[in-house]
Length: 119
Image (tube, rainbow, N blue to C red; front, side, top):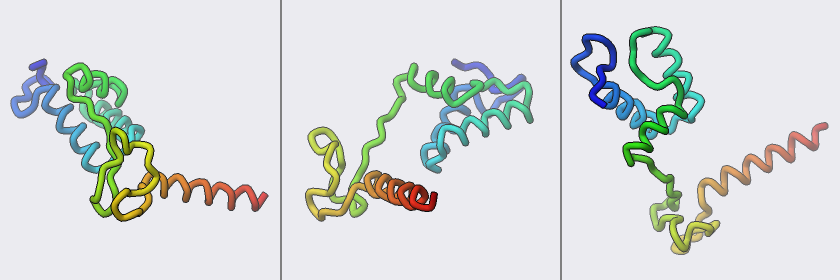
């Protein structure tokens, strides 16, 4: 996996660049489509770049290294993790605040109902 990023590149290998790009995706909370668009842009601008063609291919590469991750939701007040036996809880056991993903889902459903009422 010590393939060069592009011919003559000494600062990054293919793997180190992919890992850093994947880290930026995770830290910046970029969605998979945006990541794929960035990869596509990089390949168009730098035709000799040696990176996977899509987010799916990147994820397969990362997973093969054993570096995959599972997203675990946490209370917005950092009281608890919604994990293991608490994975299906809708609210924090400590402060009773709702899980952020549940809040997003409720907002989405409410917006959808409002849109449907207009028709």
